[in-house]
Amino acid sequence: MNPIVAFVVVMAVWTVSEFVARKTKSLLSSLFVASLIFLVGFLSGIFPEDLLAASSLLALAGVVVGFIIVHLGTLISIDEFKRQWKTLVVGISTVVGIGVLLSIAGFIFGGGRRP
Image (cartoon, rainbow, N blue to C red; front, side, top):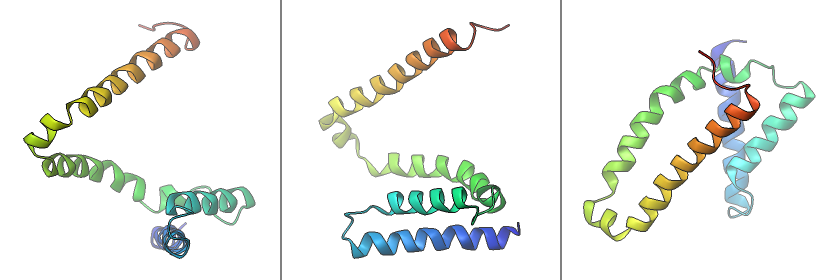
């Protein structure tokens, strides 16, 4: 599929989902509506299987995510971090816990460690 057409289709889906979210006053979130549109589009064959890959958005996301994380980190002051220390501890604990659980699941269901 042509990358420009694929990009336009993906952006049209996001535009429709954002429009629905605004009209319903976010009763239906834009992410939910976009997910439904993509689900129906892929299952019915309206969208080609390589739509997201052809749109080049997956490659862009790999680059942009780092910038977004750094930007979000600069928005929070040190004083705010001190006031929200419990949230920080819960977040770090969650990431560590998920890593441990995934390692255990990989060891159990993945056949153990491989050299």
